[in-house]
Image (tube, rainbow, N blue to C red; front, side, top):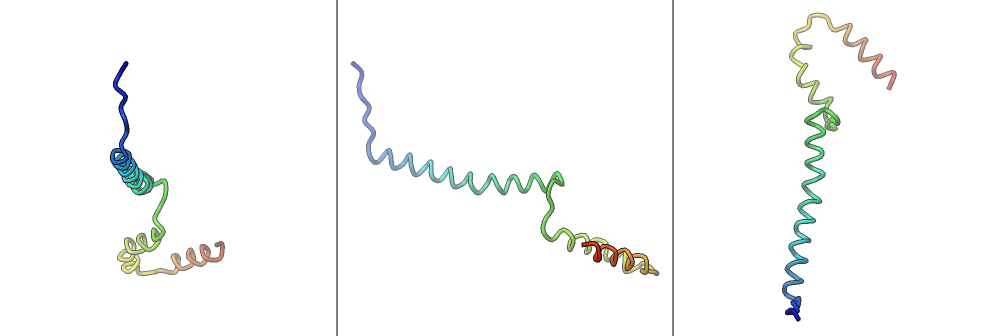
Length: 81
């Protein structure tokens, strides 16, 4: 003969609200965390990876006296894609 615990509508609502908020937070943080980890370990790259890498090598290319070899390599890359 134990005491029966009744669940009130108010407690059920708060439990639902907390579960909903935790679920929404997880639905946002898990994908962004996975993307952050995969880009950190070079599993994936960003969509503008080529633009970022061009910015990094632009000073080197600008100081290069002869660029004909780079242009030929670029044409080969473009024609194969």
